[in-house]
Length: 143
Length: 143
DNA sequence: TATTGTTATACTCTATAACTATA
DNA sequence: TATAGTTATAGAGTATAACAATA
Image (cartoon, rainbow over the protein chains, first blue to last red):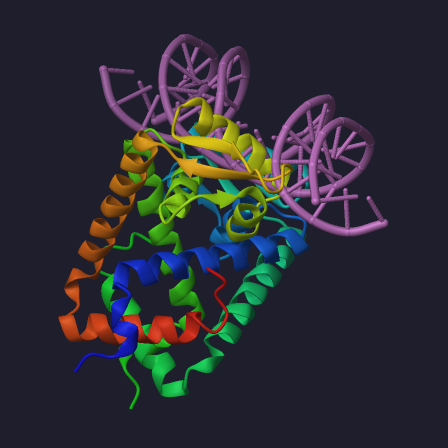
């Protein structure tokens, strides 16, 4: 039982999908005057403050690259650096009020647009798709 | 009938998936001493030569950004610029021999790693996943 | 000594605006 | 005038290597 769509390999489909999502993300970020990297950083901070080392790992960035990224969003008043009292080498990066607003708005817009793209699918298919992705993601995904 | 994985929204799953693919792409590019942008460009050229304007559209880049990108890979001998005889303003960007090698190798490695990630899924589920993605992609995706 | 984060440096990527050459 | 591409400029993103401060 071979369908017409089966001609495209899964990996190929995933790569194209990733590019699509990437562009959505870039477009939305731009509307909020953020670079995609800044938007990604802000979104990562929504659950709560995070240290530089962990941020570096979860964003796949060298510490030195991260320093600059944080500098720029801090300069715009979107995050704060707070020195840790227990370990005075470390610091926590936290969203400010306006940083949180931007992060949430960006996230919602991205989500809305992607949902729109997936709108062609029935509710049942959307659930199936989610399950399949999670099934092949959660085994490896760090975050 | 609600499954455990259903708690994660589809859009959320897609965003995470995109980041995952993005990192695979970045890692592989790096092994070949390419930036992700350069690798993406080379892969786009595999089917055949393309003009600047079309490249600009399909990579979502301003023409001026593309000029620099092409400059750098041309300097490395991976692509050539050929002036078009019919319209002497335009030019075609084509892969050289070594450019083709790199493009194909990168593409294969990326594909292999992603297939590996999806290896948890049964063959049938992989087909289902592919169909679902294509179903929600092809309606909008330009390329 | 090891870890946390920053600084210095050198490229790459990107957009905007102004430009050249051709159509 | 409109289109194809480049140049000039400025800022952002990134990695490597060397460093400072703390553990």
